Image (cartoon, rainbow, N blue to C red; front, top):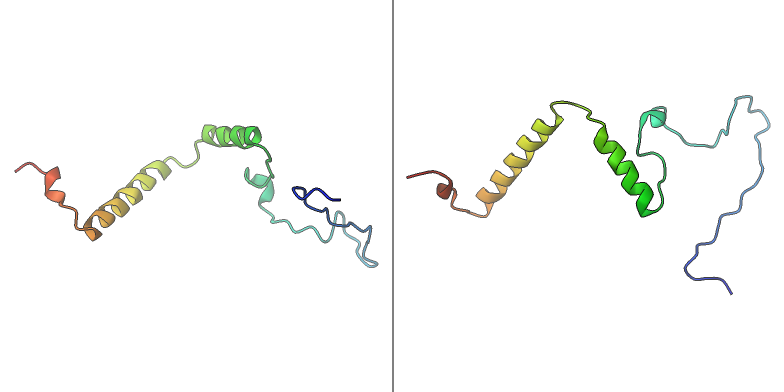
Length: 94
């Protein structure tokens, strides 16, 4: 009897195309920028996901990204407060 918690593995066949002269697997789907991305690798387990997240935090990236993100969040919060008819006059002194 199979274990109901484990998934069945797919069968693999050793088929090679007759007229393929390239190198590598012709059926492997890969984007040309995948080698530069840090999120392409499949990290299983909480520890591996946590370490990859910490590595991503160490990379600074775009300098203006944080400012742009804060401006977008502020605009969205302001729109939300206007939609729910929140009294914005409490933020200003009379």
